[in-house]
Amino acid sequence: MTEQEILSMYEDAGALLNGHFVLSSGRHSARYLQSALVLMSMDNATDLASVLIEKVNADDFDMVVSPAIGGLVIGQEVARQLKKPFIFTERKEGEMQMRRGFTIPKGAKLLVVEDVITTGGSVCECMAVVREHGGVPVKVLAVVDRAPQAEGRFDVPHATAISLDVETFAKDECPMCAEGTPAVKPGSRGSL
Image (tube, rainbow, N blue to C red; front, side):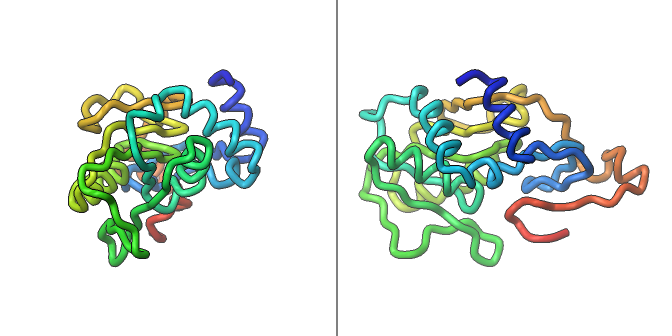
């Protein structure tokens, strides 16, 4: 599957949005990728997971983990195709945690899977939780990288199915805010 085919998948699902958005990182952008609309289709989830698993060797890790909420569907599908256990981290009162009785065997190697990364904040929080619980993150996979030029986001290798150089802004530098254009926050970290 080519990058253009993946981008078309987002466009066909109405998941490539234009406007004024506040991303999960808090940064502002004129473009937003709503992966949930793409991943509603199990065929899309299967196809995207297949692209991602081509970028790993299943013998290099023991489990798959995703930060909730965006990474859940694609993470579980990657784990299903690779026949690996799947767990997730989630925020409670603003702090990323491992809950629901999940455990990580000491020294277990984990593949971290996310839908879209920009700053990589959720992934880094997820990896910190994995380490707190005795696991070892070994690689990050994401369907979309919105900031492929950003170096050093992760201390492990990462790969994506598609890279889009989407300009983002700090709130105080956002031209859409300066114009008075209202922002919407479609992500998983609550409302504005």
